Structure formats: structure tokens, C-alpha cells
Length: 299
Image (tube, helix red, strand yellow):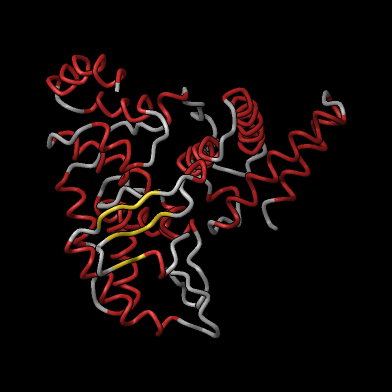
């Protein structure tokens, strides 16, 4: 892997000066994990890695359950390596210079949700023609209208869609919790159209995965992240899968949806996790929530 030699050079240099073998091994392990993650997303040189890429990696560490102190240690390692890359002229700008570790109650809250007009613009940017266009459109539909995590969406099988009952079954949500979600009429139509053409993507035996890539295999998690990032560049605002999930939660709350329904919709184990979205809705909803809390806690 082309990202690894710089890691080895960095670790060797630090080990020769001030790191003991245990520290060197720990830093090497962290940076190799980062390199694998970046390589899977198409990065072959450190010069192509941006601060946003490193932020996304840190968010991924939280989503897999890494504790705050471990995330702090990871960030410390990456900042040190970024400064070394810049000092050696291997990057034009240190991509880790602004890297920070969000508090746990900040992680699930973006700086701001997309507006409904921005979401519409993202949908408009995806063609509906052909099996690939329909696949991408359905994937986006499930991220926004069903509030799925990207990993949940790509893990779906064809059998998890029940078009007659108009539901999608998420079998393995976060914490291995299952939930059923309704399909909107537009999503239902897109799903039917995609399933009618999905066989065009098959290459060999059908393993049942809902979203297939051009090789007939299950679509990888990183694919939609890169696809939406490219659309965001065209539209002039940042887009990523998790931001769509955040946005639908805020949009539903602004339209008066019950916060307990939002909790079930998003698959949160704890209502306190859902409560952070109230910071992005009009004041009267926050006040209503506060007044309702004694009742909610008693039920």
C-alpha cells in the first residue's frame, strides 16, 4: 500500500529519538488502520488526504464504539504524523492541523442540517434512468426518508424490502437492534423499478444483497460517501450519508413529530440521544419537550 512507507519512515524516526518500542508499535498500529481506511476510499498519496477525510475517520471511530480517551489518543497520533508530513514536504498543508475530538454529545449533531431545498437539490442531481441511477436513488431515499445509517442501508438484502406491506426491515441496526420502517410512496416506486432491473448488475450467483456494484457484489459502505461528496462539490455544499439522517430527524421535529417516534425511527436506544436534535428546532418545541419530560419519564 502506497501510504505505508511514509508511516514506517515516521515511526522509525520517532523510535530512534524518543519513542520506546511499545509507543512505536501503538502509533504504527493506529496509522496503519487509518491508511487502510483511506486506501479503501481511493487515496494512494498523503497529499490527496484532506481534513474532512480525517474528520470522517474520527467519526467512524466513534460509530464503532471507541471511547473518548481512545479517540483522543488516535487524534494525538494523527496530528503528530500530519505535522511530520508537512515538515518533510510530503503534503502542501498539514491535513490534521485542525483535527479535534468532538464531545460525545456533539458527535451525532452536525453543524447544521441540510435544508429541505438542499435535500431536494441532491435528489434532483441523481438520474432515475438505468439500473445504476435507480440503485443510487433508492439508496438515497432510504438514507433520508427512512433515516438509515449508511452501513444499515448497504447491509440490506432484497428480502428486507416488503413492497406489499410497504416496509423495510433493518435487521442489524446499531447495537444489533432491529426495527421496521414505512416506505413512502415515492420510495416504493423507486424500489419496484430498481428491483425490476437489479438482475442487470448480477455477475454469477445472486447472494441477495439489495445494492450491488458493477461486479455484482454488495455495494461497499464508502461508495455512497464518495458519491455524495462529489455531488456536494457540484452543488456547493457538503453532503454525506449521516448528514441526511440528521436532516430528516430535524425536518420531522420541525413539522411536529413526537420525539419518541423520532427515537424509534432512528433506532436510538436512549431518548437522551434523540434529544440533541432539539437544539436545532424552534424554541417552542424545546419548551414543549421540557414540559413533557416528567410525563415521558413516568411512562
